[in-house]
Picture 1 (cartoon, one colour):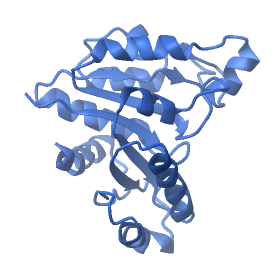
Picture 2: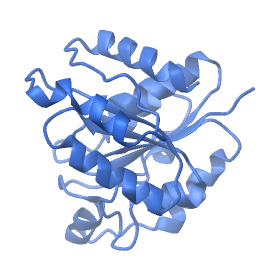
Picture 3: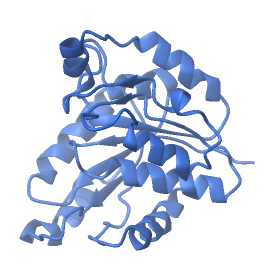
Picture 4: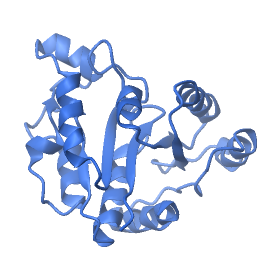
Length: 223
């Protein structure tokens, strides 16, 4: 059986990483690959002690993992993990994160980042360091809006510099409001970065289940 392993990273925060990671996990579960899923760091838990993103990821994969193995570090402040950890005086261990992820060695895996690709995790490491350490191909999620040419190019340059494989780039429209750049972003980026796979852009779909179905259809191209 083919093993599929991805790290879902974003060009920024709020670009739709969680829904993409959940769609990937659900797709792998439907293919009977029993994926391991991880959201090692989650912040912004001001209203609840339950990490909502990690919980959604766990459910999408079939609910077979414990939530504690999906999400190791949880912070209240809606900040990057490193900043939130310092404020709350609860530092994270990058070695512990890698040890936990190594449990899934040889199996299908979906790891979701926190914030953007280079958002600080602990003052020394970023999500890119996880991809590099575990040799995970990165599925880069970018907001399909004005500014994404710069943000996406910067992330692709960072990944190239670290020699991290890019599985694909997905431009996603996560809000109903449209702007004129959405007509040209995908074409410009795909013509500029000809050695990178660009999936068809994901339009805004308000209904959750319809959006999940559409995402799985697009992501199935990676299988």
